[in-house]
Image (spheres, rainbow, N blue to C red):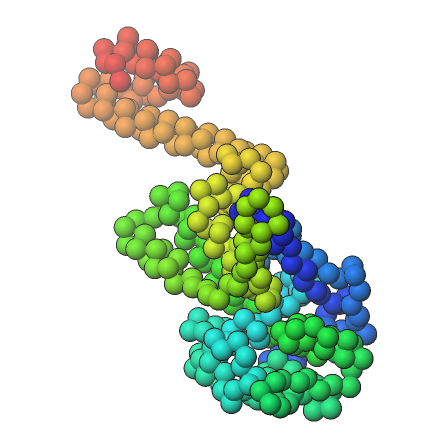
Length: 353
């Protein structure tokens, strides 16, 4: 990516080999398949794939804004999670990072989980583990330390990693499809306003609202550390989940002078433009757009011709007392050749139109 993410920012994120949708009451969740496992092929560097992650998520937001169909939402969420894994809302939304140590969880103002921003910790925990029994996944707090208790061999292996990883990489961990879709929609709305402002394609009132939309896209708590492996220090980003990495990359993208993400002028898809002058996401879109432009141009010429013909006939009839039939013959002979018509009108009617 062209947003100055150094190689030492490589951060392996984990996804399962497969996911499925599952209902809990009226809520629809994305959850790892029961038989799904984790191997080295399911680990990937988030930043090396950030171009495609941003493009896919923005296009999902665009599709879901235009459609309220539940099947469309599921298909979009399933596609994204299969490719990149769950977003990690559980560890990204709280303000208090060690929320399992507290009786209540305080959430960021712009979170997608709960508008009240304050929840009981156990209630919050159960929200992300709705299909587990206490013996499958639970937690205890002893002497100021959190311990996850499980009977899963895979979870016991994860217990050797950080608490964040133990939670969001758990085979029991779930996220609501609505959270994923609302996140994608908000990101696309922000990006669309950014593009409208960049193209000067909106009026003053809409410009004010567009700026407010962008200003409202708030994220915080992006951790980093300084590494000194060479002659100069470098920032090493330390996101705690996929969503946090996406928020950071999206912020860099919006503030970049050479933003490579664009919206196709023909089909409306978001695409990564290798050529900064590119206006279309594919040659097919460019060709179709040119065809439509050509058709519209011909249509406009014909409209101009008939409007011109209609007005000039009556103008000459009234002013020069020439018969309409005679003038119509000039138009018929001239067809759509304006210069021929103008010449004959000038010679025969003593007028240059």
